[in-house]
Length: 173
Picture 1 (cartoon, rainbow, N blue to C red):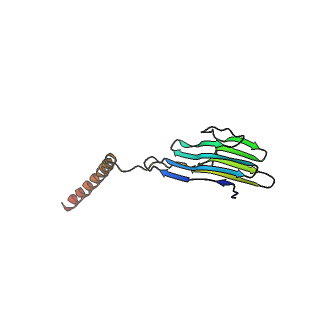
Picture 2 (spheres, helix red, strand yellow):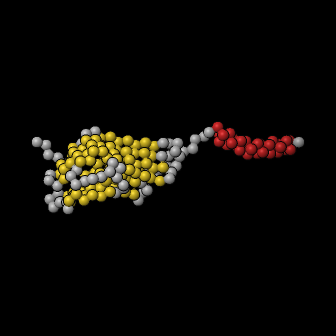
Picture 3 (tube, rainbow, N blue to C red):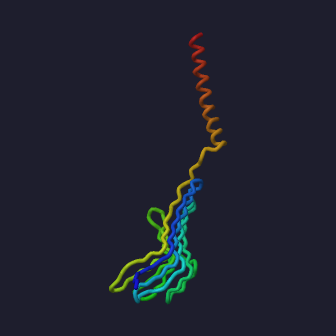
């Protein structure tokens, strides 16, 4: 007989940066979660995903749930940020927990189980994504910008070169 706090199937994570726009995307997901905290909490969740996106406009996050089967818990597939359900005096579950960090980043926990029993205390976090703030896009030299830059360089260089040539002609005359 196997006794555990949590069992899970596939776990995936992903993080990307679009260098042209500076947009950052992070997500984490877990499938086939079974929870067994002795007689305090038991149940299952078919799939859990936390997502975080950082753009020039700000940082946003979300959580997606499927197949939540925990006695005493009713929650939507896309819960509002920080949806909190007290299961018992010893167990609290926060769905789509979002924390704005001092550095401007956002941490999204799809599911955060807080156990506060006399004999057992602890936290279980399922699917965490963190991102932000977005970096400004890095402009690349384009044909127009490159020609404009060379044109300005030529305007500055030609008068200086002409002045030098005139001084040499005057000096030799």
